[in-house]
Amino acid sequence: MSDFWVFGYGSLMWRPGFVFEEAHPAHLEGERRAFCVQSYVYRGTPEHPGLVLGLDRGGSCRGMAFRVAPEARESVLTYLRERELVTNSYLEVERSIRLERPARDYVQAVTYVVDRDHPQYAGDLSREAVLAQVRDSVGKAGSNRDYVLATAAHLASLGIEDPQLEWLAEQLLAEA
Image (cartoon, rainbow, N blue to C red; front, side, top):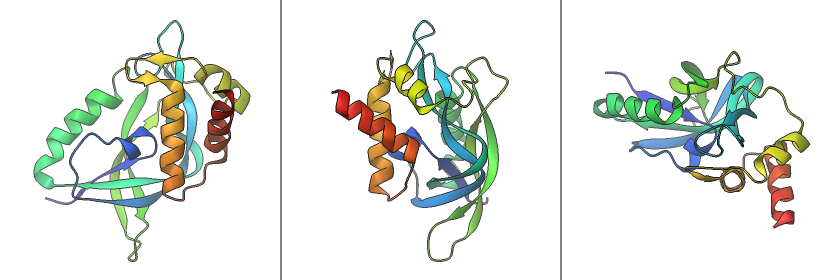
């Protein structure tokens, strides 16, 4: 069996929820991290949706790549599908990513991109619109505010710059 990799760009980076053999910062070309998915379950409700990150077309994204043991492939895929496809607003895809380690290898990784045809796709929102929506949203996994702050803190700890996420975190902290 070949290596099985998972690419995380949001909460999967700081709360993968599965056992992995190794983890490395990684780079994905052609898609960018964006607050483009309305959350009806984890960080909001259908009546008061939150916003969570998705991979949307264009640009690039730095995140984390996790190598999973071959014998754990099916159980990890089952877990990821239950977690990421809860409302089917994402599509499970394989993408070529570049590992940011000395060899700078390219590997194929499973990741989740936004389904632009899904009703929960929020599109390209201004940062002010994102702030207004995440400010008070709460779902079964907790507040949207906590999701933004945890993701921003984790990206900062890895030296990954994300100006929109950094601005959102600053605004939310200033309001506290």
